[in-house]
Image (cartoon, rainbow, N blue to C red; front, side, top):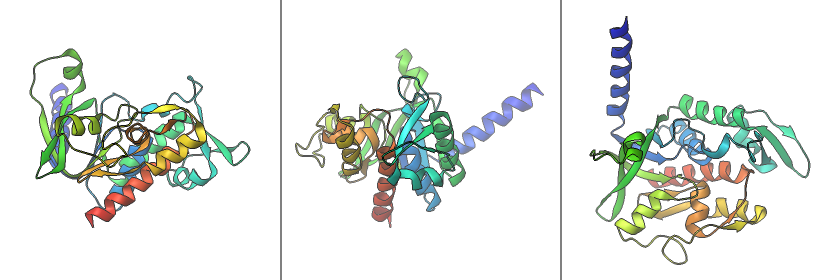
Length: 255
């Protein structure tokens, strides 16, 4: 029995990994924007792989505000919440609350059921850059990365790479520093996240969701950091709408 259990895990995992060595879209970060984008892209028939550094996908969704596991969603983002079957309660001023555990679980399950595959505990340490375009990601086990072990990574090629890595915008940082490219921002470089201003931050999250360079897209808090948007805290409507917007942009470009 022990051999059968181990064999089943190994066979299924490596079959899944091999199938996704080349994908339509590689998404870095399984936060709210990345999971919404994964769901929408997979539902549209694209092969999508999501790479999440942490053991648990969901990004900052789980913690709500200061570990109070509730978050706020604006009315205009409710269609996204409803698509994932997540329940909500009306608060006031067109604001609604969601249980963040249900939200995280719903986003993860929705992305998976749509056909996206999530590889957790996998870090992206570099990008593929060929023919003046971003063409994939270089991945490594997170424990190997954190221990500083000298172990070579493997490569995932992709037609589009989405930086959904959150506040650090790590993929875009790799692209600007290592490839030396000028991205679609006012300075051509990463502008850096600004202080808290909820209304402006929510609007900027969606407005800054874009294609930064051929093959490279950005969403969620990574988009805010790249374009110099304001922070907005435990209100998630902008991030959900950002994921939906970036999926539409990628689908247009891959058509």
